[in-house]
Length: 302
Ligand SMILES: [Zn+2]
Image (tube, rainbow, N blue to C red; front, side, top):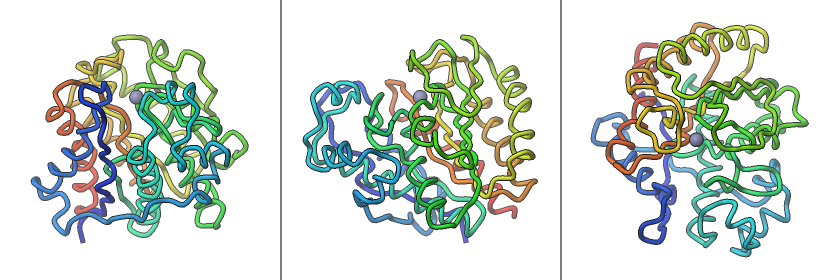
């Protein structure tokens, strides 16, 4: 069987023309994965998440506001997306997709979703293009039902994972590790269990050295039952919201390293795509295929 990949048509919602969020990348990524035979049997499609499921990580009042398309204007501004039915459905599909991919990873070793990594979603509010924190929801759900005892979030999106840190702050067994550009959004960071803030302009080799200084020891110390990997491509040098200077090859080496270190220890990994912001949607979506390629190679070799 091929690498299980979860996807949903609702991952791409409709936004007003000219909106700064590159929504089209979600649809384009799914197309590219099919074109490149990375999902030869098609995608695994989740049901959209219920309010009860999402409320495992979020305040119920906020969840109900999103479901009813009645998010206060101040929160809507903070999120940066129009909070309508399509965007709400997208957030529900994304959360369910990450949970389904997590279950597939526990069963088969590796799995990924073509969305997710909404790591600025906090308990009581969304922010920074993130509505619901899919990784926090999935981690809480699996922990709640006893499918996992310990998990490690490896958040390599270029922005700090403040929302995940917030949602999982009372969960010592769900460890959050964020490596990001220190001067980037969010200005006020909610501390993860481990934060590595990098200076501007860091390139491939330095980045990978820094990752190698922390990831193996975390895996050894925590012995997680599952790793949630936020494979954001916004550390890329062409990203308009990143401040780092990785190349495509650097991102590939990064993803390979995560798979190698977890794989050598027999630890399952679920990957979500995280951030990536360039005006060229084709180039951006192509960059998001890297983690799927790396995982598929690893999966097929196993
Ligand atoms: Zn980001």
